[in-house]
Image (tube, rainbow, N blue to C red; front, side):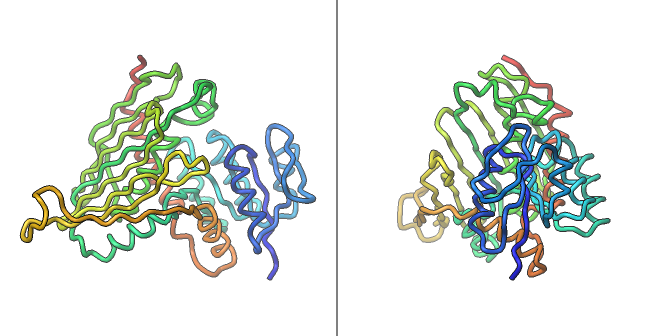
Length: 337
């Protein structure tokens, strides 16, 4: 089978992660890279382009967009109009208005477009989704998410904290993963009931903490604390149902600083109490491998080859997330310490 020819726009952390997926895939080959700084790819015979326009002029089938958020929508539109399939990182755009413009071009060109919400492809998330969709735990009642990181000594200088490049702070950088999981597990859309954004510690123009309360169309309440002052990396998503609960505690990353990745499932024991009240039986599953990047890339490849459609990280997923963050940023002035 003919290999799909890829180019990467933006050769930072995510660009290198996607490069690895391309180089390891039997169905893909890397042809070109564009970055604002000259870069040397790990692949053989890969062209380093002097502009994004030059990159689109190379002989490619698809583009990975892993550049600044400020140019993400523009790059996606240019690639689609050039007849290329596109895999774009999150955050997908600066605003929902930009996403609507992207979707219009996507529909007109008929090209494949996917957005990088890789958390859906973690083993713990995959298994939790299966349990929830079976319906054995009953109706979903509420969700509580915490996603925090420690920042770094140069955190205040990172491009992600400059609104003209990133569009927002920790909420848009990391919190969007949890917002996407809220939608994914509930099969529903949310509105924001309340939000508080602040710069609690870092001297940045974007928020380093976001506290949200959301409500779904089916009246599921979800809360999120997204933080760059957690100091110890933390991922926790708790979901309570009529007949039990599912907790995702920890998630595998390249640094393994959020590990271990576990899924805890418990059932309420009102009728047959075998333990003291409030101590139900639990089962804990540990996950040692992260193939989320590989699985996510495979979904894109399969869609381009016409084998199966994009299910995770669709343009609609991206639009709904941007609608939420648009509202939150427009109604909340950041409380600077």
